[in-house]
Length: 159
Image (cartoon, rainbow, N blue to C red; front, side):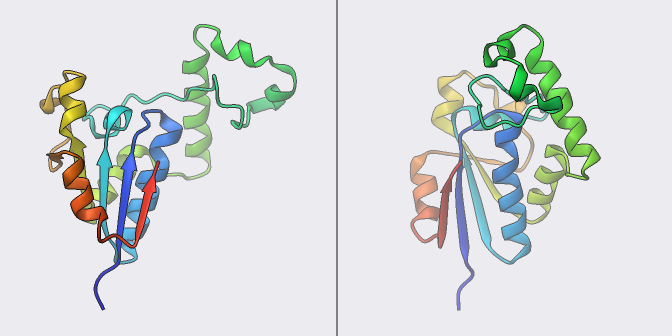
């Protein structure tokens, strides 16, 4: 029996959206899956050497707010300057207090487990990104690179 394959397209560049592809990939790799993540558009932020991802509470009505703020604090209030930084700090503290690994730790687990990480070359060019900003060990490729892997994948996720 051949090895199972997991293909993920990672498109989001916020702190909360960076966790699912890295958690799922590291877990699948630990279970013996062959895993590839195709990072495109804002998902490329996860491949930067210096991670500076933020939580965006604006437009995220499902986000549980601390101190019951979702009951009394108006959604428009999340647009107040500085709220994004405050919410990011609170989210990081909450994750740390619950023993959740950092994004850097999860990304390192993926690298150790030989998860194939592919940066979308078209998006890198589109946004004039410098490849030297990215971590070592990633590949650059286009949609065809993703389809080559995903065409035989047992599971394909878009995150």
